[in-house]
Image (cartoon, rainbow, N blue to C red; front, side, top):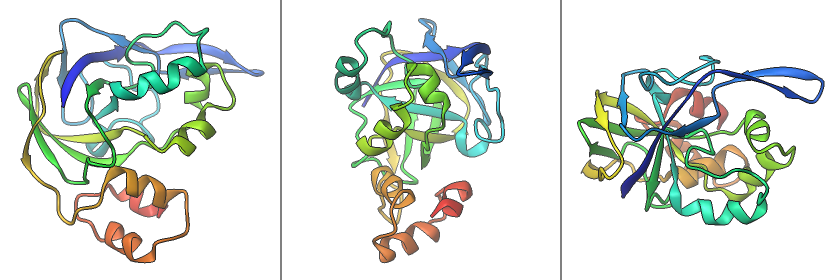
Length: 205
């Protein structure tokens, strides 16, 4: 896997329906790279810390490979990396092959897979579409949050080197499916007892 873009955003207030929404989801590429702190990306706006930032959501990554799926569905948008509010746009990221607890060296940092992204209405705001959250959930390729075990700089072109595989092996994609379904009780119990899965996600299972 390779980082193709590092993205940050500033706080922005936009109109959505009959109300004003303040959000940090509008992120854009930064050529100089980013610095991963323990609870967030330095210089990136985190508006609602109840749901964003913190130890288990210090950094969000989304697959560059998924852009070709979404771009034709929203051809009128101005497309660039960071569209999904991700700090890292990563080529080769596949949620079906990315496991909770997988730990990577990337740039100067060490990061660990902590949980899938559960989309909120602000994804609708970013795409100017009331259907985006539903479509994103149905598609299932949700991206992944990482906790930062060692702080450091990451820049475009850096590659992710797996230094420790998460155990037990349960993928980000599988956990995401469990959140929105009632099936697979055995896998659900494995997820609920996984030491590296974020507690907020366990609570949703």
